[in-house]
Image 1 (cartoon, one colour):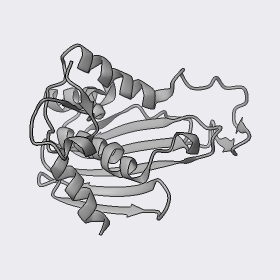
Image 2 (image 1 turned 30 degrees about the vertical axis):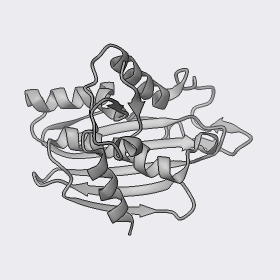
Image 3 (image 1 turned 90 degrees about the horizontal axis):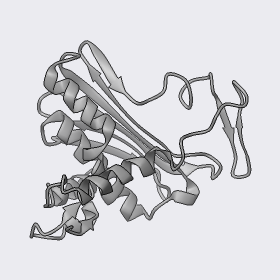
Image 4 (image 1 turned 90 degrees about the vertical axis):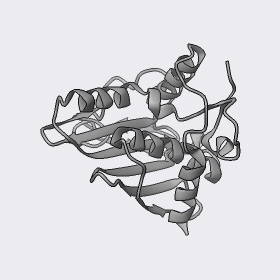
Length: 212
């Protein structure tokens, strides 16, 4: 199997003898969204929302956070929009892995990004994708849970409490982020990931320019 490079590493290469870690491409939810778009199940794709949240203990370096983690997310948005990003606006908290972004595409699709690696250490990863179509949406974001008062969480680095309701079962083992990465590694091992950089250098430049 060819080596798997991060998007940041792939951006510096001009050959194709590697795989780029654009792991959203093999994510089950992204593939389901792409299928819904191809079959016109819910109408035309209008907008996307990507969410990536991890506790501080899992935080990466700022460079990895921006040019690997976010670059892979932006690649997933381009894949679903079936167009290259034409406008990118980013707001990042200085000194923290906390980012909010908006991307526009020539075909009118927009994508919203929320990334942070600043959660209390007792909290689990969360990793969501929501696609809004003209006649419905496809998502793995729960109806109740982190973004709803039912199942509300109170967390510090020392404890995690589920306020409403009590004694709810926790997340699946390994969490959704590791599941996303694992699916990519398995697909790569089976020869289902094509080689090459797939615009990694262009995406990294988009991100750098948006942060200026």
